[in-house]
Image (cartoon, one colour):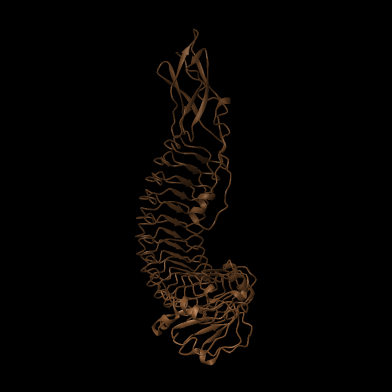
Length: 627
């Protein structure tokens, strides 16, 4: 015993020099391991008034005399591996610790031993060993039950993984003492209920994962005291209701996921006080209505997911105060109308999805003030018309999705001011005509989808100014011809689809035009939708080149010199067989853009063929003479 005390007193080497002050300064633990046969006598621990734990493991100790305690206030004593399991401590109120960890759930024993690389015997694990463990992995270990005390002594534990087991219940005190726990994973179990105090004392917990269980209800105070919690995942349970105060005190909560439950209503004040919440997911529930003030105070909220519920209407002020909101997903609900001012004040919103609702009309000012909006997703509704000013002020808009509606016409100025627009999809509507100026000002537009409408004709200037257009799809309409100059100016066009139209495959009207007295050019009235390389041949003369190119987006090739070789005129014709644009096939894949645009639907890749053929008879057949 003398040696054990001296080891706790650096700088003191002789037992005669030890004072009462020295003894009182000893805290924590005294370890006397594997000393063979030892005998304790009266007064051995006298003066150790601040000692916490006494280890007497693996000694041949038959008893502890009652007088050995002296003035000791030791809290606990461990006799693991002693010869006499029935030994009496004689240490006043001291608690006898179990022998090692051998009485814990088997998988817990195994995980602790795995974390202690040099120990393989459960009986040899000391409290000091337990305090060195910061991470415990028990995921997918086939655990059906835990017992009280399984995690005792793991005071330094920061991460506990219990996911993917078969736990249906938890002892109320199973996590007691885990004051440093930072992350607790309990997802993918079969928990049907939680004891009210099960998380008491976990004051440092930041992440709590409870998703994919069978929780139908939560005790009102179950999260009390988790003041440092940042992320709470409760999705894919069976929650049908929430207590009004269940999230009280979670002032540091940043992320809350309640998706894929059975919530049919929300208490008005359920999110009160969550001033640091940035991400709230409520999708896949059965919310038919929202209290007007349910999101009040969520001034830090950036993402709100409300899609795939049963929402049939929205209170006009439901989003008031969400000044930090950037993403609002309301798709796949049953909204037939929107209050005119419902989005007022959402000046930081950059993504709004309203697709797959029952919207039949939009009020003129519904998007007013959304000056930061980049994505507006409106496909899959029943919109038959748009007011001319509905998109006014959306100066940051880059992606606009209007496909799968019932639009029969577009006001001439409906896209005016959308100078940053890059993607405009309007396929599968009922547009029979397009006004000449409808796309004016869309100088940054890269992708325009007009498939599967009722378009029977195009005006010559309808695509004027779309100098950045990369993809244009006009398939499955009723176009019988292409107006002159329709593709002129589209100098960046790479993919064009005209398949499935009445006039497909379309014939381009190439003609030879004399330039001065000794040169010709090839003119394509419609404009070249891609670089057209056309072969030329001459009878009675020679050419400075046998091919010419009509550059993409232009109507006229470079000039070719013609030199007569005989007494008569040189006759120049287009060699139809060598026209490089005959039977050109274009393909595209929507996958990447579709996924980026909607963030929930992909896999719509397809290959489409645009048939461009040279005219069946040479245009400009009258020979060019006079060379």
